[in-house]
Length: 142
Image 1 (cartoon, rainbow, N blue to C red):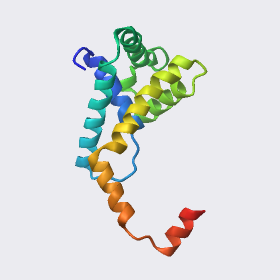
Image 2: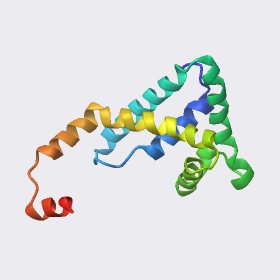
Image 3: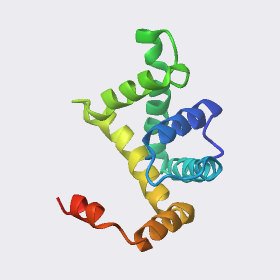
Image 4: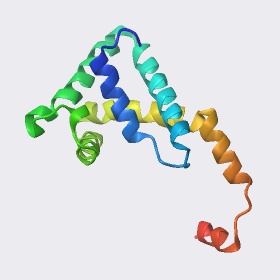
């Protein structure tokens, strides 16, 4: 992770923040802690890539960050939240495979780390242990 630039770390952290789900509901401080841990995990995964993969992937991070300047006059991290979501969605749905794969790697690692995080697992397990009302069970079965 240490060989990634501050720009690369900020870009990846912004993407991670956008892709981690709001479910289950966590207290704000717990959510921030989980988000930071997930960001660290994703950055570690990128940082441990073999050199022949790391170079192109790092170039993709920088490209992802700076390309919005051409369209919006701002780098990715400086875009308003809805525009960040839309830009990320465009890359996710791109007909150009490397753009989709760039996002897929970050999203996959982030979701793995998020749902495996002890704080998220404990909330999910607590919710699972709570008995549901009859109407909730009926709705879930549909």
